[in-house]
Image 1: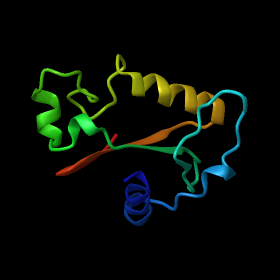
Image 2 (image 1 turned 90 degrees about the vertical axis):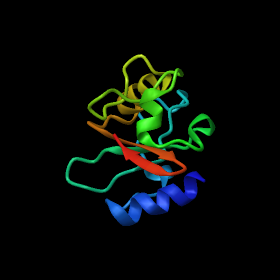
Image 3 (image 1 turned 60 degrees about the horizontal axis):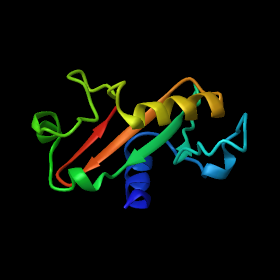
Length: 111
């Protein structure tokens, strides 16, 4: 599913290059993003397709009892494991931003 989402991301936003082209500060750290983003600032892209959100929408994610990925303002919640993963990827890849995409079956959220 992430491959399809990567193609969608590529068409809607910017060209996502092959992940092997990502420069990595510490290769032994397993923090590979789904791909780098080609733009003036050069960031990375991380795509998540959580099974727990399979039949949900963005609104459903915020109203369930499980830990939501996002805060009210469409930001990745700092207490969530994916936040720490993205922070590690930013440091290891030495980039300034991460386009974090969450695929719900009935919604796509770009954070």
